[in-house]
Amino acid sequence: MLAWTALAVGQTYPARPIHVLVGFPLGGAADVIGRIVTPHLSAAWGQPVVVDNRPGAGGNLAAEITANAKPDGYTLLMIATSHATNAGLTTKLPFDPANSFAAVAMMASVPQVLVVGNSLPAKSVTELIALAKSRPGKLNFGSGGTGSATHLVGELFKSMAAVDIVHVPYKGVSFAVTDIMGGQLETAFSSLPAALAQIRSNRIRALGVTSVRRSPFMPEIPTIAEAGVAGYEATGWSGMVAPAGTPADVVARLNAVINAALKVPEVIADLAKQGAEPEGGSAAEFDRYLRKEITKWTKVIRDAKIEQN
Image 1: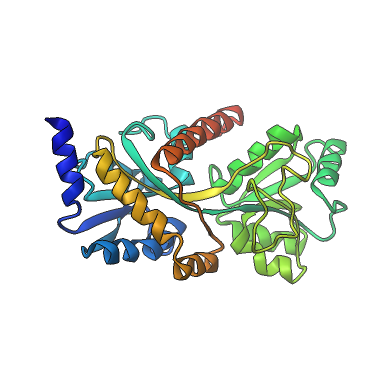
Image 2: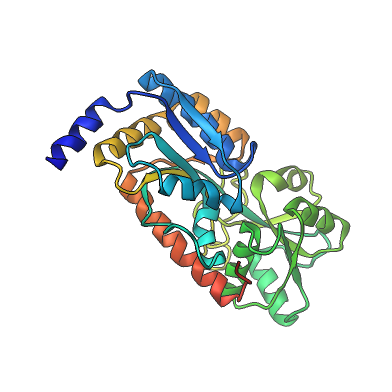
């Protein structure tokens, strides 16, 4: 009986407007990516798809609302890398970051980039590692704040490269990049879009991107993995989930229309303006990736003894 009910829901879905929650204010990566893709869902189905910003608690407020919503496909959630890192940064979440949700699709990825000042005598990742090992505790790296993505990718780098580099938190990674240009800071991890103009104008030097593959926006920059830290990967990403228990047929319909949208030239171009690449893939693949990300970042946070909330 339950199987027939789920099948019937899938065949008639969607029959009314869909709400896509975003746990961050307007203009954030997850918000922008959601607003690029969702109009194509609406066009495909002839039903409104409304993006609803519910900022609060680092994205956890919208996640809690979604986790407690009826699992019928009419309340969805845009998540980003912070959904995985919150699992380690927040001690008592009112939901399970993996098991309270049904993964729908990974939508886009944005790499971070390791940058240094032009005066630093390191022209590659391997040279930076050698320099750091010759000066333990003397070099520093800036980030957008304690527990931020740019902090955590730096801690992962420190661990995998076995170097002692001091973390300097800023109230936004743009301030760190400014200090690198001014010589007050030596290195930083930044989102590639935020540092692209300064890299292209030769005001700072890019040593490597954190993604598993080179960025099409600056293909001359090697990945950190190929530049000297084998296995390193720390890509920023955005994707969509639904409440756990959402019928598989509904998840499949959502996944199919998102994958189709990510192949539309207009969508690809709009994502590129944000420095993002379309991803896609099956719901099962996204579920495996999300769980892997939660495990990875929780370990990084614990190993680095980053203060939890």
